[in-house]
Image (cartoon, rainbow, N blue to C red; front, side):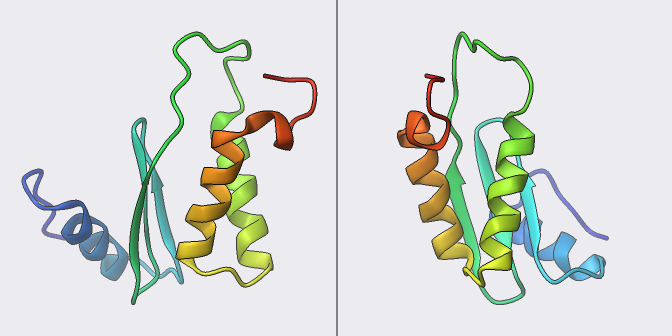
Length: 98
């Protein structure tokens, strides 16, 4: 596998995708998330909370949203839109937590 730190995000995830056996590859980093399904590349910024009330669970919420999108046959574009709605208005996803 030829992964260079100087490669673009798209080149990086495509190279990684073709080196493993997966239908979709998602990389959730601290500042953004990358997705590639063999055809479509997508990147979205992640939500950053400077002083979180709860320190764990962000990755679990991201994974749950991704699985929900897969089970409902959403493509990467709609996965990103779902994520943006939840992250921009988190109280709608978790009543009582802001």
